[in-house]
Image (tube, rainbow over all chains, first blue to last red; front, side):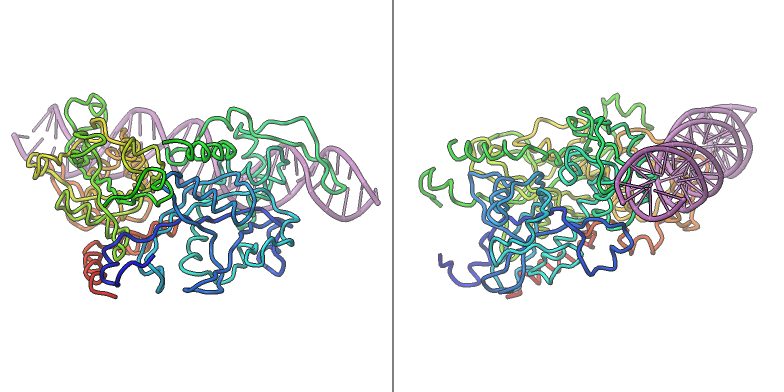
Length: 265
Length: 265
DNA sequence: GCAAAAGTGTTTGGTATACACCCATGT
DNA sequence: ACATGGGTGTATACCAAACACTTTTGC
């Protein structure tokens, strides 16, 4: 697809694509004195792909793909996600659209509509990299990223921190049923700092959002902890203030939407 | 520009454009019993353009325009804004990117990168509509909008409400120098509800963000009010939590950037 | 009994809210 | 003097942080 000379191309619309910041809970990264303070703990991990062309050839970058007129942006992000991790996202939300001409650093001007996603707990999947060009990294020990992708990851993390209160989000990380310690662990992993456990317990229980399942769970050889879940009320209603955040769909539905979109018109 | 038949077109990337939600402070809209409660007050106004083609021909819609590879998204939004209002934005920030195929309602699939902007107080400019196809409306009395633009406006308002605490934002609405009553008026206009003035005063003064200019301002024939401004410290530092919000540039600078972008490469 | 994690109590300080009240000014 | 908006005081309630303490389990 040849596009004429440079001065002609300047008036053209730029390339448009979708990128995804994929986050998952995993074991605490080793060698970080940072997490020696915060209890044993978990950390967030993120998959990156190695670039196979200029610019930034060989550097790590966010997974991404193109747009199609018959896909919603969310569907495009979904496809990009699946093609790199083969995991199903448990949450998917638009982050921001980046379009500064300077960010392409010598490549074609590029507009990236960036999504962020949560996927299942990935314990055990870390070792077996499907592809040599895809690798998971702990967010507190990332390599240098291509383009402005480092900033983008930072932004995704701040967004997650801002939404950790929402049951729809935290549930995707800790699961449907959890002890207060597990929930606490997730909060600390996301916040990146320690949180007083006693106050955390009270705050959570006082919120009225949790209900006792009646079960107990013994992690080590210590006193068993009671297992909680979010109440149906809370999970159903979007307590979220703003309308654009209503993207907590069940992703299996969206897969169907992809199919229906392909057969519509 | 003919693009082949429908099934071919489906695999193409969709059209991409920029739209802008432009907000300005103006007099309270008449005939709204809503604002009888909240003091005399002001309201937010927004300019809309009448559509001159299908779909939604004749309906009111958000101003917008195309993208160019040598413009940043912000610059494109800036151009779209100027061409409809001939006003300079005092604040401009990306809102969201809309791209569901269904939203075009029979038109070509369209991705809209939406910005929201604040412009100067528009008292006096309301009557003299430059163009018959551009008209200002109070946000609490909008007509039915084309596409999903109604939702978009709602979202822009919720975003503004979420950011009213930021000096960079509120300053663009109330000006650099203001009495606490004026500031209070703006807060009420944005929140859409009344706020206890006494507590508002204390909260603002206790924040340490304001400093007395030494001047007094008499609005009617009552006791003169002291004039405040935000401290330089506060205005300089972005106290904002997230990195993507750093778009509180001085727009005059950006105009220069437009020029330099046109002359670069 | 002891270690380790689960779970409770209590104190302290800050902040939001409601509302009564005083002050300065022009007519 | 009095109406009007500017400006202050105060009581209540709630919420977050800090941290000492008790309980339950396996060894």
